[in-house]
Length: 579
Image: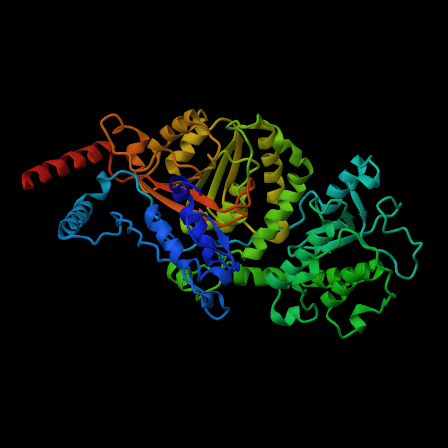
């Protein structure tokens, strides 16, 4: 017989077996296992033995307890002790309510000029402000100016194309001749390359496009750009009656496969003017079927018609784009005017592809993780800044660290403001000079004007020109996302010369928020840039990440630093007297 001590430890564990599906049960502390038939006979002996050994025995269930219709249930566990409520879960007592009301009253009574920097998420959602800005924006000069054509960009790449086609670099044929599969005239190595000459809205403005497609879809795509340019002219420069013979293009037109192995479709080279289908639909059909002869023939027909409409297109532009509406009409949207959004985006894209695109590798010439690291702010970001901060003719925009000049040229074209930029990285600044020349030519070709624009190569902390720009600036943009603390500190001293109410837009805050002003900071930029707003931008707004993020807008205070400090002292004195 087993001793009672060790058995007692395992009694709970062994008794749990009595509640299972097994036909066997533990009857006593002697651990004697018996069958169901002997349970009744051993019941009395079990209870006596348990009493003498002072062991708590498991009472034997009746045979009916093991039937399928009824099973015993274990003893109920003792109720668990409830976790005490946390401080946040407790009801708010009268003392807490009184203190909360006191803190709110104290905060509202504190003068805004004496508060430390705070974060405010105000204004309309990012990207909701994109619309034309009213101004006089149509030139009186013709468009016959020297420019870098689409053909020039592709020819340059073809001349540098020394690697085999298997590496997927350079350009390949996009079109073919369905009537003659042996026709090699649409290949990049043919003696006569496939070229069309396209007409722009202004007098004397035209451009040659090579009908080839890049092996790498991220490279410049001349056919895609040609179709977008045509769509922009039809939508922005023609009346509904003038637009009728052309029709419109579908939204999924630019969906081009990188490889095309489909058999050539039968050719249908009927004269476009003899068909009832609009010209752009015929052009789209040839585009998707890769029918080179039909595409060239239709595009020549389109260009001929546009050439005869140049005078009408410029008249339409003067009537639509030059509408000088008031600020009230602009807010209500009851009048037209300004450069259409689709148009200024097209002009900027063409400029970039011809001046920066071929030498884009020059933007990667910098020391890694240095303050000269290159990054671009995309058009959607700058467009939101232009509208949110009210840039328009007569305003001044300054970009410190302007890169290739994208933000400068966009602000000048979109709003008509005067825009200036400076870049310390010499190879990148050289690209901004090229872009300035091409931007000027593109404006003439499209019949447009912009505000004054200028880009420099230099250090914004040392340049005398920057000091002059700062004194008259309404908006200063600084992409300081990767600036070190020393450069940020040197930069902020420039802002002491800003006009009252001027805005400074940054990607990273200059100082910690809610840091109180002291005598040490009363005469520093931190004292005059106390008002700051924290806003959010959408994904794909910057070049270094696809994720959304935050940007900050500082406002130059209208109160001088000494008065800010005095305001803090007077508020403390008044609070003491009230006690």
